Length: 355
Image 1 (cartoon, rainbow, N blue to C red):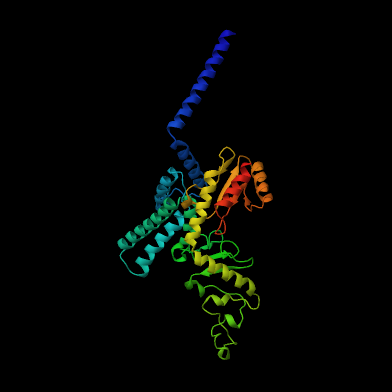
Image 2 (image 1 turned 45 degrees about the horizontal axis):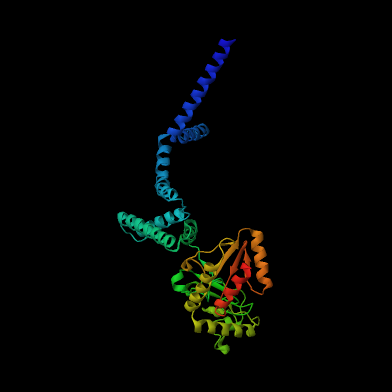
């Protein structure tokens, strides 16, 4: 009986030892599971088609994986940094297209086309890296935009949350279109706003139904081409007949004049000063700052929150009761000061949340 138990124990020990050795082998040879998986895949394809393992097909496969393999090596370094590059496929296509145009259509030597393609891809990657590091943006956001750009997509920017409160230069933003509501930082009424487009895109955009004042030659009514009218090559091609609220536009114009007279750069400095004052005086035992402390990395407003969503809602309601208007966004209290606010308004907000 005892000998039987000992034999069982020996067998169990030997089995455990073999399993441990297999586990150690896998840990020290991480490539083994990959090779086994590849072998299984090849076996399936070979069984399905007897030409899969022929020299000609293996040569084709080797040639086809060179490009993907080279790209994969570069992506590994991005992954090691804890980031991800979503534009790698589109950018490789851009470089390949650049090389083909130079070599095939323009007759440039192959070596020159290859060098230009490599340099072009490197410059684009450098540009995206500079944007990521300078503005501290997530790599997947920047490379997603790059993915769309290199595929020929046009970029539209909704600037409603900053237009009028920070300096903006569309020639420096690199956008194709920009829209903004007029009722926020532009001090206009509801129902107003603007749409901006690069001039080179006007002829490519198809307007909807338009009336005579949006047509070419509207300045000379007698000579208008009513048989085959064409929309004007300007912003008025989108002018809508008899739908504009001119009273609202007059109010928007007054708001724009005030913003321009003060200057967006001065407004941004004023807002940053007030938000900095708010953040410096928040009791940290009750609240957490939810926006970057460095105003160079945040917009014209600032957010904070209590230790729990319930307490955040409670403080938000308390501010509303005291006629201090803020916004509750994703369990955070957003404070958006403007040129009509001053330090006393921040003092009053702090006094309400600290009582």
